[in-house]
Amino acid sequence: MQEKESCIKKYNELSFRLSEETTKQYSTSFYSASRFFSPKIRRAIHSVYGFVRLADEIVDSFHDYDKKSLLDKFEEDYLLAYKAGISTNPILHSFQITVREYNIPNEYIGNFLSSMRADLDKKEYKTKTDIENYIYGSADVVGLICLRIFCQNDEELFKKLYSSAMSLGSAFQKVNFLRDLREDVQSLGRTYFPNFQLETFNEETKNKLIEEIEGDFSKAKKGLDQLPKGSQLAVIIAYNYYLRLLKNIKQRPANMIIEKRIRVSDFNKLSLTLSTIIRYKLRGI
Figure 1 (cartoon, rainbow, N blue to C red):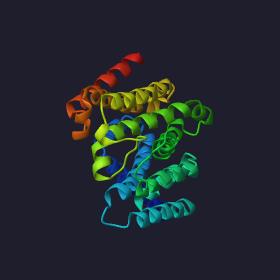
Figure 2: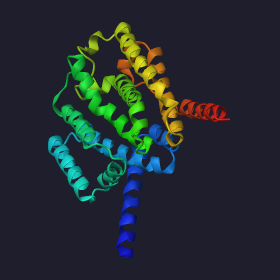
Figure 3: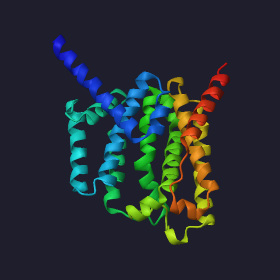
Figure 4: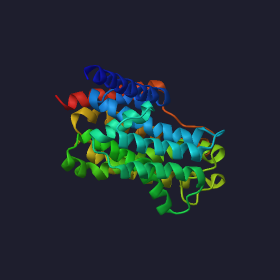
């Protein structure tokens, strides 16, 4: 019995390490911020990232394969993993452990996979309702999943921060839409803004979109001070990074956003992280 428990524990640790490595390989910015979560929260967040990233890669990168079949199999394998409490896919295994531990509603996961499935067929979002539904599934529910982890099953705190977490997920996703505008339209044939036309994208359109995103950031900021200490600093670092990225986009002409992927330099990322840590520590004195 003891040997069996030791083997399961070893497999659990391996699965979470692979989720961590997935996070590190695919997003250096997020991985850097995640180091400031408490150890328990960090490993859970990495498992969420691994699950979300794998689904996203299926729909965005596996062009030479049957994406629909792969996504269907991915969802089927997750449901089996959740039901059995184990999976031979380490990414799914670590994620189902997190889902169980933090009582994450399967409704959220279904919403997320529905938005991923929409990316297989839907290329244009013509109404505000269409894009809001997509963002809810692709980003807002991911924010809510993370919030359940941050709150450590404190239902009252979760309800209090629910709206802020939704706004933060929306803000991050919309910034990604602007950053990846050229690739989404030209490489993937997708437009995530209602009635968007690349050839008519100008300063007025850009500024209108940015104003909407700034509103999301403003709503999200209200919840940052109420986050538990084990997650607060990491979330603030991610918040400040995306805010800086939005600022860089805002400062660039509309035509440059179409021609080049705007980013935050490694030096500025480091500077931003250090300044955020210093301000955070001083505030706690």
